[in-house]
Image (cartoon, rainbow, N blue to C red; front, side):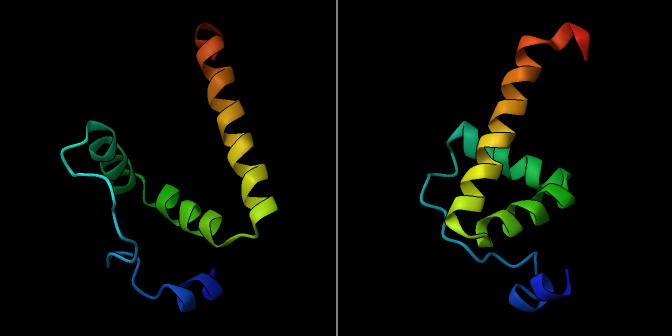
Length: 76
C-alpha cells in the first residue's frame, strides 16, 4: 500500500481525465459508488496499475462474479 501511496499520494485529487459527459447516468453511478466505497476506489487504482495480463485476469474475474450474482440472487 505504501508503494501505491507514493505513486498516487492524494487519492482525492483527480488524476485521470473523464472522457464521458458527467450527465451520463452510468458515470454518475460509478462516481457515487467510488465515493461511497473508498476501498473499491483504491482497488481499482491498483488494478489500473497492474500489468495488462494480470489486469485482464482480475477484470474477467470481477465480471464473472457479477454474472454469477445476477443468476443466483435468490441464493445469496
